[in-house]
Image (cartoon, rainbow, N blue to C red; front, side, top):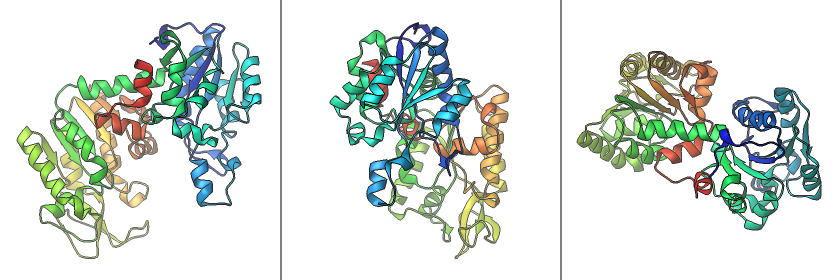
Length: 403
């Protein structure tokens, strides 16, 4: 495996797998975090005197078209990224209307140092998600060097992320700067952390986070649990949770996790109180309640003031912080206070020397919403990939480069 930072790309075509699967509304990119994340890698190749061929997926075109026949492949085109990326780089970005067609091969072959070519959505081909070797080989012929900078897809054994690497010798395949940064940040939190280590785990379902909590029981000193998943724990302990979200089939698992944490000397913190609502809506009537005494007909949609004070105190004493999942339905203004308070507490702890990693789509959206992304140590671009890494799984996109 070669190292991106020390590789000289002069007169080489770098075939870079990026993750440009960004949210687009009415043809306008609404969150460019993933594009911004790829810029340092692209700029380094160009500065060396190399050229760049970018490949990415966007959405799930073949599956979505099957469900909604009114959609066409054009609805999943990466074309809107072209002017946006060109503006960020300050150069014209070329576009190939396919990823392995004659047009793509010709444009890649004619690319001169300092130029950038973006290929059309890889997922126009079912072979991409199937990890098809022949498809991967066709893609590999477009460049001299393979760079994987798409941490967000590192957990998928797809053609462009895991299979393609075998067609490049060891010194011609490497992680990009974003991927390097992601792996280093994750390693620091999971294997080289300073104590106290606090993991803040939120989101809707316990079932989505069981594996990560189990891994953290061997590493963290404190685990803060918020969001909808907290109410499964409260109900399992005999509490009243009204209409709050609950996975009844996971209550035994919740009790087992609490018991295991106690045995390992890890403190699991549940929110003492909640902001409750009479319906799941932005215009709902709200009140506050102890989290295990929520009246019938009401549901917990955010953590309350006691929980905020309780959690912020723990965070302030931490040397390492992992945040995965919001504390409530932060997309609605009435239920964003818990997540905002946690984001501010993490930023404050970081300012005083803690190492903080925010990973997972909703947590990242929260720190971006509250304009605190630059106040934490690292913001991960890979939701599912980061989650699987923390669950202790080997990521195919990482293994392919290391092997």
